[in-house]
Image 1 (cartoon, rainbow, N blue to C red):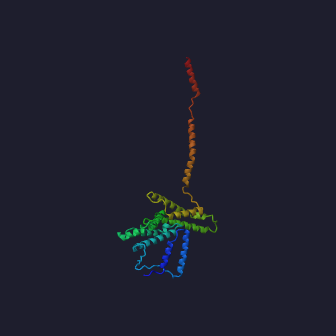
Image 2: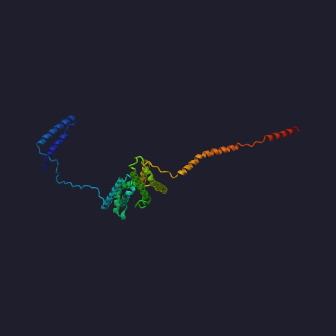
Image 3: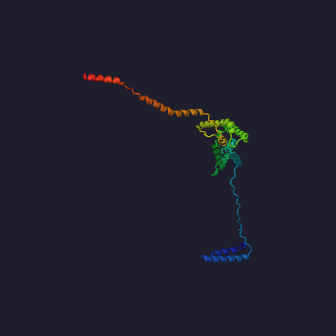
Length: 323
């Protein structure tokens, strides 16, 4: 079979390159001459096809390599977990201020826990479910699903949402419902009295708010303190000493409004015992110095014999001496 057109030209160029002198100047000159010769030959030849056809040799077509796909059931479990993660993260972000995580996102959190358990546990001890857990959870170093699950669990535990919910996390506990009801009543009282005095009173005078909402605020504050005491007792058995973040944030908001914005103060109910104890402590030094003075006066009392009796006795002694 005849060689393809331009084959001889390629051989000529290769020979010229191999025969170049070793010196740099001579090599450059020879390269220039070879380039001129190649240009002259190229002008008289048609376009060269650089693709050489080798007779009798056919390269097989390699299939495109793709990563192994998950089983249909595994894909379904992974998609369900992805949807649950997106729903929970969106809820947490929307309820960040004011904090309402435990109230609004408990459904999404419970749903995500169930979907993670579906991936992790071996349903019916079948090899397919075991492969799903291995492929999704531990097949790579990053372990995205495990990392996301740990993040949501840590966030939920840090917020102490279990202290606001019932044991099965199906709803809010009775104490939390009572607290939130008083919290809403306090805010309603603030708003109502602010609207009533907005026309006649200066912005820095909130006397009506302090007077009319004092009872509601005191009930809310007492309930919060009682919840804290109960929770501290429960912390000795291993539970967190903090209330859930929803209750803490609601109480912080109310206290800031009451003390900073409205400049109200709650009269202390233990004023009488405090005054009595303080008075007793103040009078202790007076009692001490008075008792010391009286005791020292009693010591100074000395029994003195009469002088007449002493002189008679000395006279008797003298008479006996000279007798």
